[in-house]
Image (cartoon, rainbow, N blue to C red; front, side):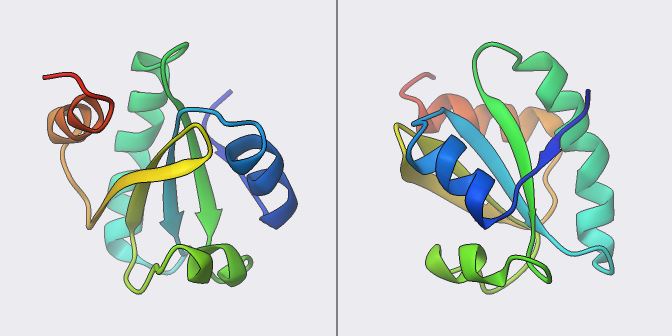
Amino acid sequence: MGVEILNKDSFDSKIVEGRETALVDFYADWCMPCKIFGPVLESLSEDLKGKVNCYKVNVDKDGEVASRFGVMSIPTVILFKDGSKVDSFTGSLPKEKVKSFIDKGLGGK
């Protein structure tokens, strides 16, 4: 299945109105750190199935969504819970650090 790419409409219906717990990667096709983070997100999406949904938003195609959340650099990864932003980080992190970020954001360890 892989990580689903969202546009403005699908972002609002899944993340904001759908109130999913989600990790969203704001990226661009030309961005090298984004390309490095892509496989990490793919792997996380498998590990987190049923707990956190993973998505991507292309800032070149859907810049309005990125602007709404103050995305100034890419990749920026935002954790959402119940339709609201919980926390974010910028840059490509290793898988274990992203898992710790998610656990912390969701009130875990």
